[in-house]
Image (cartoon, rainbow, N blue to C red; front, side, top):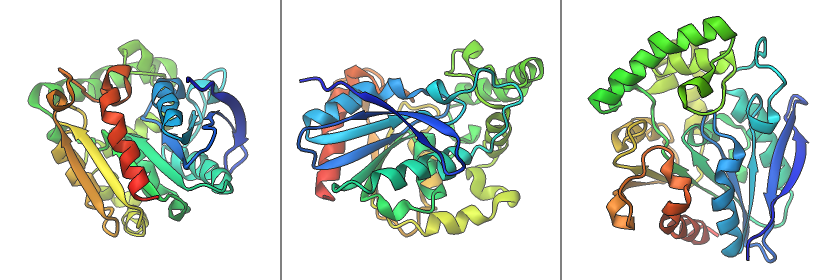
Length: 284
């Protein structure tokens, strides 16, 4: 039976109002918190959240500040740090959910896999599953994708931000529009092979990530051009204290022709989802 999600609002650690949706299983064995990819609204993860309830897990989705139902009327002049999505938004929701009596798990899509290492209350997460999380550097991508991404960063994106005052991501068909601060830091970090770990302005992230002890399953499709398995490996090594189970996912092995960077949560990829649930049950 499909469970209807219940919309709710909560405050980030700095008081910023955020929108979420709670999908409640009748007898939940745990709660799965879904941390979105960059520029992806929470509704994209609805089908996976509904599936989780059929497996006796409640699920919670939410929009980061500046995205979806958590966005201001205009992004022009909207100031934020890319890390705020984790340390202010996700962190506040973790605090709120860990008051429930059941274990808390995290599904992180792309940026959502970065976010675990950026929050101070990571100890509240029993286990995490990352999908499509990587270092973001163009050098880890196939050659044609690398060229396309570099043209986007150094050609189209500066033009759009100059005109709008924010990254009009939707004009490129890449997702929701992004605040200027997100664009600026994302572009900078994607210029380093190990993302923000190589950035001399953010040396503290190494210690933050090495403090995380949450067990992690890191799944990357071999056709995920933005987060190839080698990109994942370049990033995941910094979760040095976690037991990381890395999975190279071949689409044909689960009956799909392709997965890419967004396909993990599309309805056709449902054959992938039981493995995620099984991983969480293993750590129950």
